[in-house]
Length: 257
Ligand code: IPE
Ligand code: IPE
Ligand code: MG
Image (cartoon, rainbow, N blue to C red; front, side):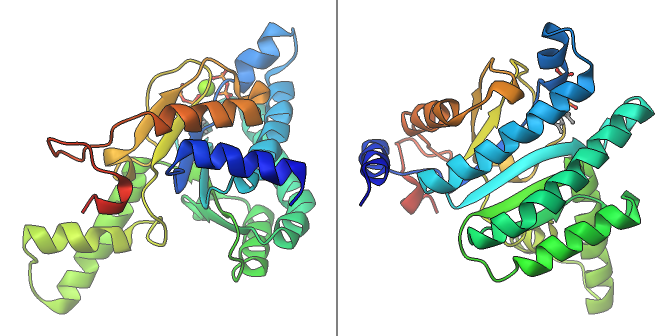
């Protein structure tokens, strides 16, 4: 074992239960650029570097699922030039990163309404998803043109279609247990830890169904400055929380159900 591996093993032991799934609302690119007298797009470019770092660090620290909010269904309201630049950066990220992600055994998936994305962007996504589909390392999900209410509306419609074919109205218990299988996140556990950078303390339509029992960690750090130490700090904060799931006593993740 290298010294770095030893350090990580010692840190993991000090944490106890690592979060299995971390979701991040990557916010503050515009303010980061503004503080430097740069255009917002420079902030987005620096944000891509922070994203690369976060993916690497999450895998290194032994967390299995990472879901990143990259573009919300409301972000189309931004100036056209900014939206265009965000999409361009996404394509650059996919082109430059997919091979390395594959080499590192990362599985990449995109959630969100892909139908509204440009054909070349969709093609890059499809290629990355199929190339990495069998990988068992970090399960990386990028939320792109994603909105929590949109997802719930899509899932509800799919469920209605399913039951109209089946020909009966399910009871509430059945709706709740089957609902997850209609969500875009059906193959992953709910986030244990949700991090939002840049000092904002809201969910902004991210993973509304899935965050029912997530622990939230808010940091003032702007996304382009977010690094491995900030990620470790958020996990340390998470590890000090009591998760009760409605019970009177503290339950660890392993006996939550
Ligand atoms: C996050 O940074 C990136 C996206 C939402 C695409 P922002 O662009 O929201 O940065 P601020 O919040 O204006 O600083
Ligand atoms: C949320 O950030 C969306 C992403 C990080 C992609 P926003 O910057 O769009 O959220 P609001 O507008 O501050 O709520
Ligand atoms: Mg923002």
